[in-house]
Amino acid sequence: MFGLFKKKPKEPTAPKLLDLNNNPIVEGSVVRSLRYDLGECTVELDGLEYFYVSKSTGQRISYVKMVDAITENQKVLLVGGDEPKED
Image 1 (spheres, one colour):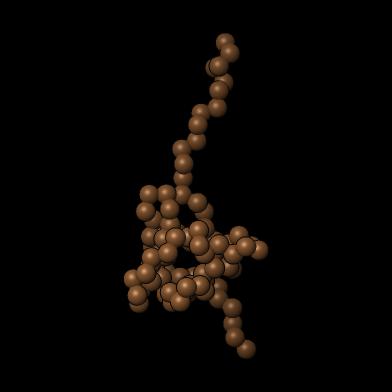
Image 2 (cartoon, rainbow, N blue to C red):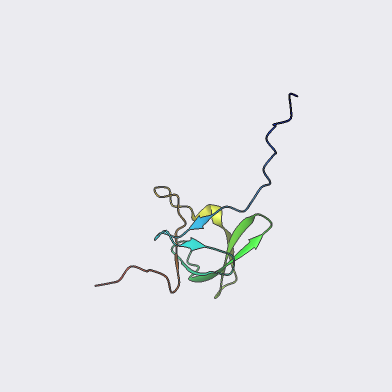
């Protein structure tokens, strides 16, 4: 009888990413990077890890390097999303 209710191991999944304005980031999203002079990037999923690929240079950066220490969101802004307005 013991062992009938064991928890099944969870399958690893890709992390849920949010930009600085708490907008969800998914594979194929276009974002503006605030680090590494990448400019506009597309988001690619390789296995279980997200990468930002610069449209201008082709440079590829892991999502781990884009984490904001305070909010734990990504240091990117969705293009066409809710971006801060300049006065």
